Image (tube, rainbow, N blue to C red; front, side):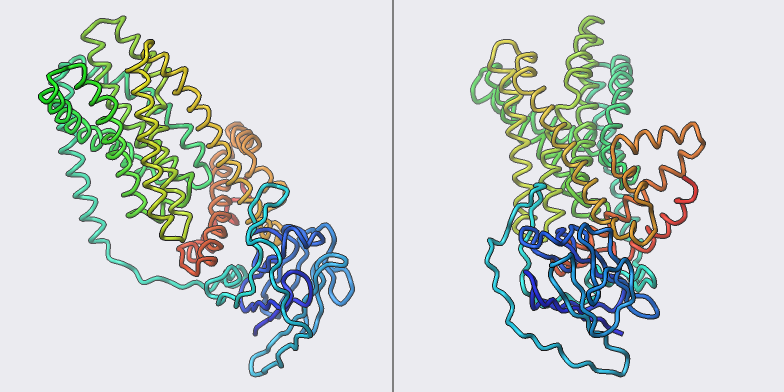
Length: 524
């Protein structure tokens, strides 16, 4: 059984879409299967309606559109479609005709009275709400198995991938553990040889304790689709062990070479602080983000994940680096230790976090894109920007009188505020994506409109979770929040893969997330 909807008027006139399984969304929003021009089709809502496949046929559902949905001139909320029905999206809005093919019956093609209207607008227009919309192109419909309509929400049809051997993963894990262990021992020996065993122990306690607090904002950003704890630990260890050892060796060698060439310890210090440190420290940290992007793509989904992984790697680097500084402070006396704790532990613990987050943002943009040029270019640009900021930070403190506090006031703190603003934007962007993607499940009754408003609001969801601590429902609410978030993001991943005619594991995961939502919704 197959439904074909053919648009008879409006910006998409002449466009035909097929539906055999799942559902097909209609509206002006950028994620709809049948996308009307957001500038010209003002009678069509952002999420106007959807057509759903059921065992007994196809059903049209109006998703609380502003101007209504009409079948054969009658307003409908939900109705079963028949072959030959005419649908109108909004009063005086665009019309479409429905053809339904039953097994063993071949319908006649619909005759078009007019050729498709050629595109008269620029390829990209900006809506009043600031989103970028792509003007619909008259292209053949994507095969259903690669489209949103293929998600069998009533009767899931899922392509099961053959089970892969875990031998490679086990070998990789063993190799990683060995490398971490060896380099961790090297890092410990370097620190203890530099400051002594007892100062190193005290410095480690002072440095690592606040790190567990500083990582919490990053985890909050990623509350909808949290990364595996073991992968977060691996990222932290990469920054604190691999990147630190690599940077220490390279910076020491280049500093020695600069001293031998110039004979000036001051100039050698400038080379190390302003040139070597930014280039090679960001290279070693950024390499960790790139490796996560390459080998753990299933856990690296978007820009937000790039910020989280880059931030955690930067935090690991800063923490171990602080052990060295605090150890020297312990040897110099309590006053020096307190001073270092103020400037490194309280005033600027975010410096390395924000530097490496730039590379993470570049990798996140690459992950969201299906353009190979973007995939290659953006991580490089992110790294370059990280190096530039690192150089500016170290150079300002080195060349201008006032040292740290001058650099902090001129560059460090303002840029930190900019990063906070960007993170807030990304968080609200994710909330908007979830609202758009999950509107279909609100209409279907999987979740309520109030639940959607709660889980996609930073303040409401936080208060909701806190309330769960006193009511004994924290675990259920936390699981429900994550399940809803994962479900909405799976729709988004499928939309992106569909647009690029690519593939995504979300096709397989979507039914699982739906089951999780159904499991926890009654316990919240």
